[in-house]
Image (cartoon, rainbow, N blue to C red; front, side, top):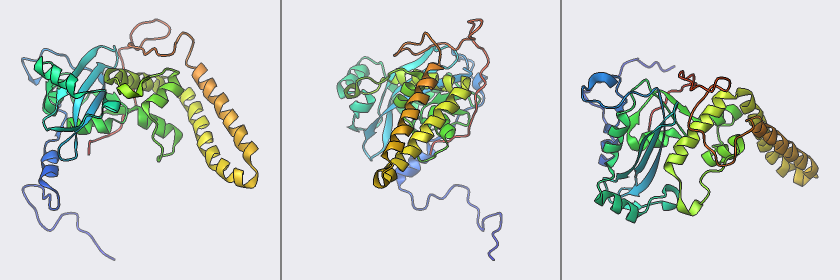
Length: 302
């Protein structure tokens, strides 16, 4: 039996990045934890937000990495837009990824010439930190990607992708924001794939999905059960087609469609396709809900 001591055999004043490239080391060392002392600056003109929904669009840069090129952030409780700005990359761009980012070289050049961009990922991070601190809950979809390009380590996160994944209980599947909006909210986002994503729309959509998931746990479970059945039915359908079980697969799909429609119907009347709420209100009084009770998870960009 091998016994391991709790302490290493040697101590060094700094971490030893022994097999990492200088570019990787530089990137790792640029990450910061979200500050805890929001009120420390006497010149601060913004107020701390209890929860913020955010989304970033990225471009590819020299060295094979990605940089944030567009940042959108909204107050989770009120829907107020806090940030919606292009971000000038710090390195030469090798791929604009317009079909996803919605950003073109011409649009970026125009914004830079007009002084309408944030200055690199550092400027984007500083702008976000004007509204949040370590206690602020960050809301989004696949937030590890956004935290990664902003180089922020944050421990209060509610991720719509994780909520869906946990509800269904199958770790290998990842649900896209567009799919969740369609199946849970019955709304359509990102309608034109050639023009890319609308960053602000995605931030608001992630906010809407999280609101629905946390406010409708029974409907979420109904949707999750239908999704599990469909996924398992797809596996069984492949076997059934070889053993004459095609009819059973069709029956499973029919039950899936019925369950999904029931889940969508439970959202309530008056919600039209394409509508994204910008306020969280009490359904009885109509007043804005001041308190946020969301599940949290520890997350750090890697």
